[in-house]
Image (cartoon, rainbow, N blue to C red; front, side, top):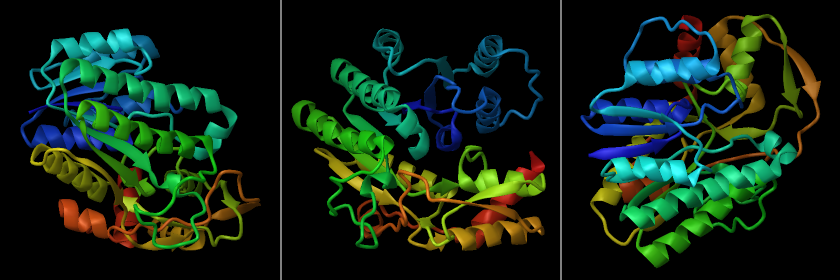
Length: 340
């Protein structure tokens, strides 16, 4: 099978590419190496996902990405340095291959930055996604997995969060773009019979995690003996989901789509284990064998107080069964962090 993966050089995307290639498939990776964080991280993600251990001699972004494309090109893997807002260039990629299924992970991420740049988030997360659906319509691609987010639940008072809960009150532009993606996805399913699974990811962590996310940021600051920004009173809580479990859920969603017709589903992918900020920091301290210096900060606009996934639908519909508890996940992350 040939899969097109957007954002395939990112945290989740690079792990998915690695798994698909390991299972004998071909992958087309579209990634724009956005400046949201250092492009060198994505280059290393790409090399790791392909099992390439050689040191990469960095010079400047444009030439480095061209070099990466040249060094990684093969019969089963193609990398395109491409923005999903550019539909004309995307069309050329779609024209070059017979794509069996699209996994759309690319997005402008982050709740707080979306408050500062809402129009850019709309351009990428809504218009960019619609470009992909328009091309699926044009090229007859009828299977589509899309990354949504637990942020769509906002400050939902009912826990755990279920796919049937009302999500009409997002509290950040990022969350709103993800909710729009779910609604527009149903339009394309209804009008053009694009079978689709929308996956609501719950706070994904593990090796290759983005450096702006709390677990990675805290671990780095502790290792450097620097203060960590500690928002609120430490009772905010998240359903942290280990990357291996997320990839398992994506793969099982792909399998479900390939074996089922007339599908539009929204599915939570979480761990169903809620960890508060104090507990998260304590787990990192234990693995690092080092205490953190905390800098108290007020709660940030757009942040939700708690997430908690009801994963019963994922279990019965696609056979999802997360297997990594938080302490073991943190241990694996810290081991990776200290190696890199």
